[in-house]
Image (tube, rainbow, N blue to C red):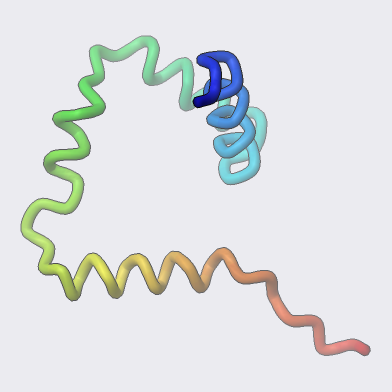
Length: 73
């Protein structure tokens, strides 16, 4: 099991990679500033979507993670 510090570092690394350093810090500031219940947010995140819709969104997101193919060799 990872320590709290390791989890925080991994989380910030993911945020920074996907949002950039400035927006990652802004995200953290927004979360700290607001009364935010992550569990309630997650309960409603996919509300009303079918399993097929969730799967389609997951596959579309996965496509965005693939590196773009270079046409030069």
